[in-house]
Image (cartoon, rainbow, N blue to C red; front, top):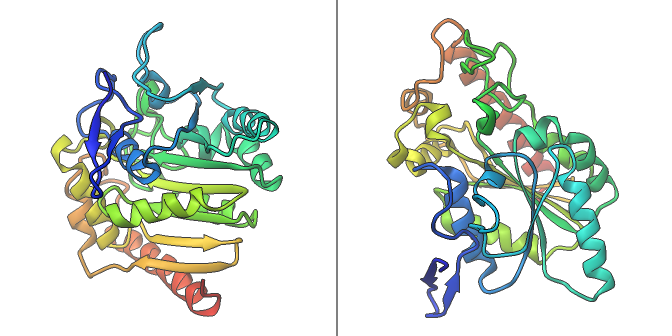
Length: 297
């Protein structure tokens, strides 16, 4: 049996993610799947998922918690797998989306080479990175998406380097569309997925995805955590078209940074300097504001 819900127009839509999956309570990835389903409505998709929590979600063979065809890729090659599926689909006249669904480990780090190659060739796929800022599936190790000051199993004293700017890397490839997604901003999320669906070529979507176990946060606060992340400026909501035209979708509302940090227990006092983090956020927003004003979408 699959989960179904009613759209605003009264139609019944079957969810990509079925009951019985192995995801934790409060998992941002699960919420993202529900919104992805709503955005694409009844349209069939093909999923490609590398090694990550997302592929464990399916459960044990021969059953699957996914309601769509899903290919399990190696850690480093989800974009290469998706390239093959998209090419075959084009040969067959099939215009349904091929969607890569990968964590930050398979995007920022291990899968970066094939991701970059597919983006440079402008392959026709939608690549979604659900970014929980750790290697969540293998014990919560540090990734290059882990923020500065966060303790992980391989950086127990707190990470000393700032988070990698994956959006900057992807927009430098001049891909047709890149955007950030918030599970706390439903209409914005749906709009961006639909924009990606209606764009041809390589599309990159970055979704901040709470992991209550790794973030040491409360499962019932996951959506509120992302709302606060956007409100304090930690996670900017914006779009980039053709690598050159910027649109900001929501701006910080003066919510203090400590409102976000204080809801988690993963930040270490020894490596955490709120003043430095606050200045990094302000610097990022000065850059985004300049780009959106100088090169508006």
